[in-house]
Image (cartoon, rainbow, N blue to C red; front, side):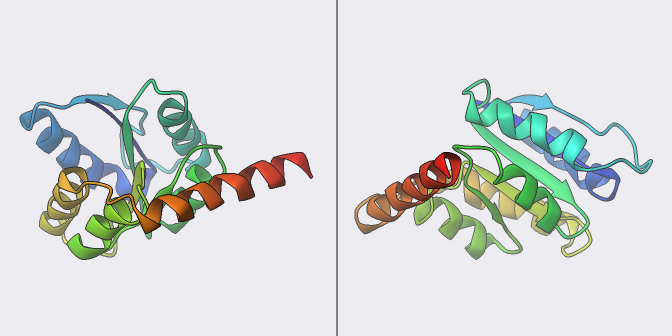
Length: 150
């Protein structure tokens, strides 16, 4: 499975930790940057990472910032992306089980590094439950189509 990663300067160090962890777990990682803690504008990095998931180049994506909010906003502007801001293992697990999130966003300034690894593992290991949640995911897609056509 191929996982896209993207981070701004605030999320750079956590991205590097998660990247190593994912490689150790056997995932193919595509790193869209940034490559240091020098200031960058997060849309320049997050949008390409999100597009790679939307087009199927990557199966899943994880983005990082200070709070993770701006990164999730950018990711969710890409049609087909369901990016959840995750701050705990529980929020990450539910993001996959209930929302079938194909991306998550983590605020590096909001959590400990070890919790970041646990969040990623909880999300990747969870499975979408389908059922009543499938209907809701379909409604999200319908809303996206309505926005495109207006």
